[in-house]
Image (cartoon, rainbow, N blue to C red; front, top):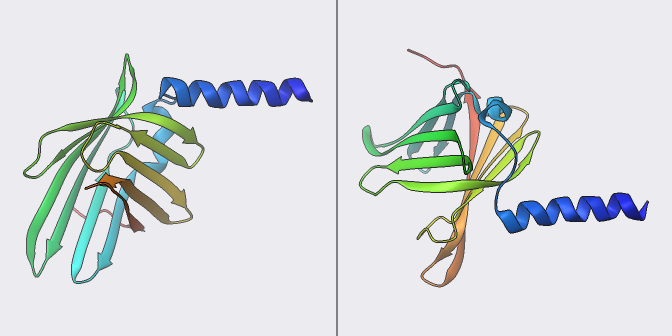
Amino acid sequence: MQRVWALAIVGALTVSVCGQTSATTADLAFLTGCWKLESNGRVIEEHWMAPAGGSLMGVSRTVAKGKMVEFEFLQILDLPEGLTYVARPSGQPEAKFKATTKTADEIVFENPTHDFPQRIRYRLTGNTLNARVEGTMNGKARGMDFPFARVSCSL
């Protein structure tokens, strides 16, 4: 029994120390589809294409008072250095985050040198995709949750 615990601890430390996981884009099919969140007069939509060719492609849009106020182009890529989340938000430079943790229904990406966020997490619970961004901003810990509901994709 001690050997099993020792192997589990070594495995966990390997993920933590290396800052990567052996997950690939094929493991992230749970992200596929259309997701929507309505809160405080804002509508946030996130659409993810199915994994193919070592990639997932996504797009996000935020609409408030009938006008688009933010957008983001997203990719998750199988790269030689590991599974990588690439965000291209409106008005900001591209940012890359490496996968650090993966379970059957959750993926966590991190970039400790990014301004904010330093961590991005997606967790599927039923028909809800819980996205969370967190990190430090101006010396204070901060986090935001985005509980997206699955919606039908319209053309």
